Length: 250
Image 1: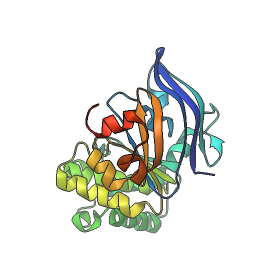
Image 2: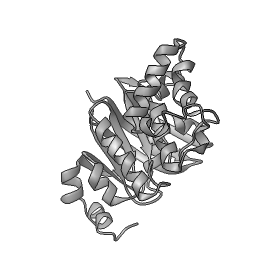
Image 3: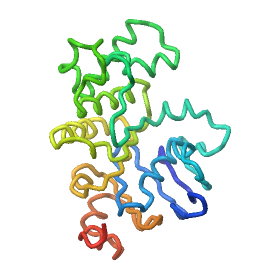
Image 4: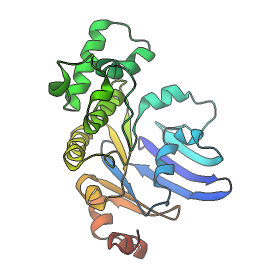
């Protein structure tokens, strides 16, 4: 069984259909990229995977999103535990208004960790995993908001890793970054994919081709096709996918 499986997922906003009967298994330990024109439901699909969809007023959701075989759309699901499993990177970085160290330590502390040595080790390990350690090790207690935007996004990635997630979700996580910072985030994600199942939304086809092991193409709320990225992006079966990849649909 795939770590993340989506079954008959439907989403509408105030009666307007956003996703229609989505069925897909997300491969474990790979980078799955969700592509498609603006407004096709990419971010909606991603937000269903950690219940951020709950925060959207007027959203109606049915079907199943199975994580480890359990339907996370069940109203009895513990949202805090779910979001610990499913790390999330937004389009823009949102460092907490505290120090660099405290940003990374925040999650483990919330989940009950009090041992200072363990916290120190987690902070160092996660900052090294995102290639931030060498840049910030001498100013760990400086405000995180003083970092560059690119560093802030890597800090948010370190913060997500600190709670030991099983998967990482990214909603266009490099769209607010300059090319060099974006490249650094991409490199980190490629290095992390063996340890985590990674699902990314992107509107940049070049990025999808660089990162994707598996590709999901949405069009007007419909899952048009999905499969190994080498097949979907190089030899798509559906004319709508071909038109999108050719730049005829934006």
